Structures are given as C-alpha cells and as structure tokens.
Amino acid sequence: MKRTRASRIRIRFFMAAAAVFAASMIFFCVLVSARGRSKSLPAYKYYTSVQIGQGDTLWGIAEEYCPRQLSVKSYVKELKQINRLKTDDIHAGNYLTVVYYSNEYK
Image (cartoon, rainbow, N blue to C red; front, side, top):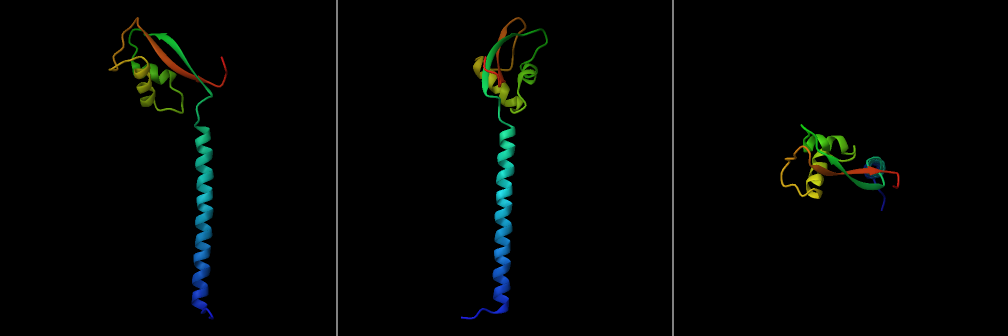
C-alpha cells in the first residue's frame, strides 16, 4: 500500500511534534530535579533553647531561625508542636525550644 504525499507529511509532522514534546519533558524533569536539590535542608537537624525576651513573638523568633528552604508558616507550626503550644502566645522570661539545621556534625 503506497502512502500519499499528504499522509507522509502528516506522519513527519506528528513525529517531529512527539520529538519536541519528549525533549521538553526531559528538559522539564532535569530543571525540576536541579531545583529540588538546591532547596534541600542541611544534613543535620538540631534543637536549642532560647530565652524569650520582652517584645519577642513566636513569628519573629521563627523568622530569625527558619532556614531559607522552609516557609515561616511551617516553621511556626513545628515550633508550636515541639513546644506543645496551642496558640502563638509566648511570654518573656520563658524558654522556647527552636530547631536549626547545619551541615556540620556536632
């Protein structure tokens, strides 16, 4: 069965489109993979205790200790969880356990 010129052109078009789509998907996967690696947290997670000062807020402390790779909102949630806080209220003179990350093993 002999193909017409139009059907050969249509087949070439779909093959070219499939090749462009495949190349785009490979590029996208490589881009996402590289971006994911750059956002990874340092290797080790540590805890320390800080004394709450006058005028300190949970969100302010979170902004100070939160690594770039996490959102402050998720970091506040973690602080509330590890310190068993039901609200954002903290009081001067008390201590708060905070999380920090490092590539250095201590």
